[in-house]
Length: 382
Length: 191
Ligand SMILES: NC(=O)c1ccc[n+]([C@@H]2O[C@H](COP(=O)([O-])OP(=O)(O)OC[C@H]3O[C@@H](n4cnc5c(N)ncnc54)[C@H](O)[C@@H]3O)[C@@H](O)[C@H]2O)c1
Ligand SMILES: [Zn+2]
Ligand SMILES: [Zn+2]
Image 1 (cartoon, rainbow over the protein chains, first blue to last red):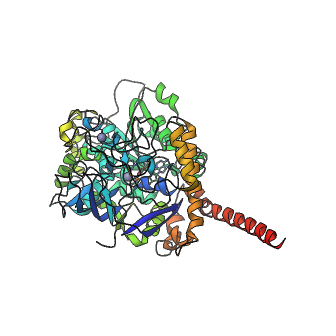
Image 2 (spheres, rainbow over the protein chains, first blue to last red; image 1 turned 45 degrees about the horizontal axis):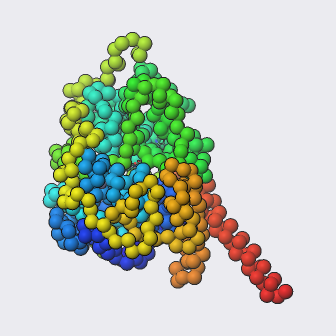
Image 3 (cartoon, chains in turn brown, yellow; image 1 turned 180 degrees about the vertical axis):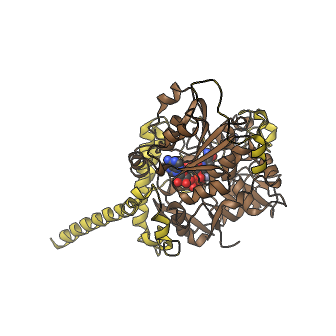
């Protein structure tokens, strides 16, 4: 089969690999029909995630058709069209039993601090991902779900990570009616978080980024106010000014480890890898939130430490909430919202790239060329 | 203003927001949100029909965090450890918990060694690494390389110029290393 393969920082290519095999009775092999590149993949692509091995196939957002099932699989059949959450999880450990699917303890031998994720380095379990023609899907009775007949395939694809994560991020903000919500980052996660904040009754939603074309999307797609942080001497002061000097009730970090806006922080983390991630956005969140407010962290950071302004968070009595999204827990509600027309996830897809051109896809998305927001990868066989 | 008790009024009323934004407020009840409460004990809800999963066969020794009591019943088998990078990574897992800086620094070192090992090995194959095609820079024409970057405010321009050096650095370094080794070999053979 053809698969995306990592060749070192900033380098990927398509290679021939063996079709994955059933390795456990509850495995399925899925033929991928569509995959996407996530902002999280950029952290791997830039070499920021420890134990990202040469030859690894990335891709944790994908949908496809069941190609083969293991002997204990009951809920899926060969030929089913399925959407697969980015979490690999068992459904039965202490954490899964409580709905914390992203924190599963039975799927990642490499680390206890993080669950399993498809195609996301050995630090999340060493599973090859879905930017390929075929992918091994463990616990086929737990994660994957048959795509409802009425659902658009692009919408289904967005549910496997970005949409569920944005919606989950808004929930962790504990928004109450009339709250002012600031979303840092106008990538797919931030756009969906902004849109979801309205569903939870936000009174104002303000999206902050430095890419004008993404802020434009935040205005049209997510109905939000926007601020380009480069237009302000100090974006924190603007966050205060625009909230009558109270600060935002809720701030959602949808940026993560490679945040821009402070060159020293960016270079020490993203380029020199001396920090687990550049905490610029997180520190803006801490400073820009009102006392007693809530910060929801969806942005991903590496396992090394970061220079976070923890003292201010404590002095302000902030609530910091965060996690990898437990994707499938969001689905029943998201399906309703998509059906009712409240959410149209596919509207943010900007590029469709054949798997054979994977290096171009990563470069365009990483360098933010051609107004790229969300690239979809089409494997050759489909 | 926070100097007095009342919360500032939002600029738009709920009715205005409802009219402008499809679905405004449909999830306003904090108790009726899918991830509330954070922990909800319901092992029957996941589709798992086992108390503890069958164990995947361990066909070769699988490295694991020493914070785990055992090898997890299911694990990825992609890219098993090999070479010098394998030795370094195995050491990181066997010796240091995730709480130790050494664990992560060894893994980062393993990544760099892995990259060098694989680049060198690729030259002995029919498909050597090609930094031009693998970085995707050939996509620049056709995707508005100039207008995407210039004439607008973009914070990342300040460091984007470093990327080619990050990519080329190891190549230049290994080129020099190869040249040094080759010249020594030549000297030995002649000498
Ligand atoms: N928690 C989860 O389950 C989960 C799931 C998916 C993605 N993520 C993480 O969410 C983050 C966003 O993902 P994405 O796909 O939207 O990525 P993305 O790279 O497309 O978007 C990030 C955006 O942040 C902007 N940005 C950079 N610095 C900023 C700053 N200081 N302030 C405001 N904006 C800034 C960038 O210009 C970009 O538009 C990533 O860190 C990703 O790893 C987490
Ligand atoms: Zn993701
Ligand atoms: Zn589990």
